[in-house]
Amino acid sequence: MPASGPVTRNTLRQQIADALRDEVLAGRLRPGQGFTVKQIADQYGVSATPVREALVDLAAQSLLDCDHHRGFRVREISVADFRGMVEARSLITDGLFRKLVAGGWSGACADVLMAIRRRAEEAARAARAGDLDIFIGYDLRFWRELGALNDNPHISGFLHQLRLRCWVFSVPYLRGDPSLRARMWNGHSEVVDAVTRGDAEAVRAVIAAYHAQMLAWAERLESGERPERPQQ
Image: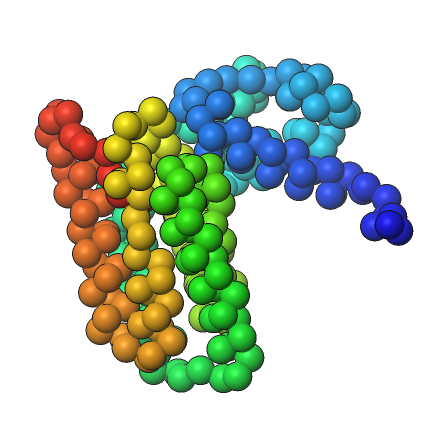
């Protein structure tokens, strides 16, 4: 197999950022957990420069907090922040799907929808298996690729970051939940079916119900009640 080219500092920076993001999503790096550039560089056996750049990137995505004297720590996301992110997602996706359906689909877009449907199917398969790590990966890809149909990288990028941060908040509540399979949201295929049909109301109904469930869960958290885990 031919070599794909040398590993540059930029690709190493991205690889480290991706690896640390996966550690956060997997719950191996917990909210509030701190570390230094040196600790991460030693862990991955690389120099400090790409590690520092990767950590700064993750801080810019609001996944880490930076303390210039002590290093970095995983951001602790409050219930109020989670509620605000869900509300923001709800408002943006409502406008996004109105625009997508009103604009119709091109042949190229139909090809993209086929790929997105595969993400939905893989997410459903992971949900049935109760594999949270695989489910999160396909869920993030599903929403990122669906949002990219809007052809506005600012919107799709912002939605991806909101989705990522919502997962960071929710993962500690989901790990070890014996009813995890039942808690995994399975509306991906319904969304892509409705988008393919051009049925804006069906898309909005599925996503509105999902966001309402998440907001109700946040409200129970704020009240101090010990709630059931959310669907994700």
